[in-house]
Amino acid sequence: MAARRSSKRATVQAAFKRDTLLDKALTATRESRPIEFKEEFDVRSTRDWCEILKDIVAMANTGGGVILVGLDNKGEPVGSDVRALLDLDSADLANKIVS
Image (cartoon, rainbow, N blue to C red; front, side, top):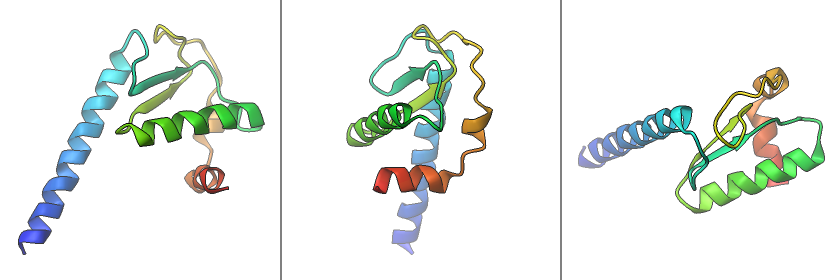
C-alpha cells in the first residue's frame, strides 16, 4: 500500500514538474538548457531528424526539457507550418530513437 502511494505521489510530482516547465517554455524569450526552440521541423528531412534526436537525447541525459517548434531563438513565432509534425505518430518518433 505504501509503495502504491509513493508511486502515485511521484507521478503527480512529475506531472507538476512537466507542466511547470511547459509554462516556462511557452513564455520564454530565449533558449536555456531545458528549453529549445526550432524554427521548423520537416518530418521528411534526415537532417532535421538527426538534429531533433540529438536534442532529445541531450535533454533525456540532463533531466528533461521541452522543444518548441515554430519559434525563433527569441521565442517569437515564425509562421512555420507544423501540421506534418502534429500528424506524426509518437510511435514513429520512438522508432527513430531506437534505430
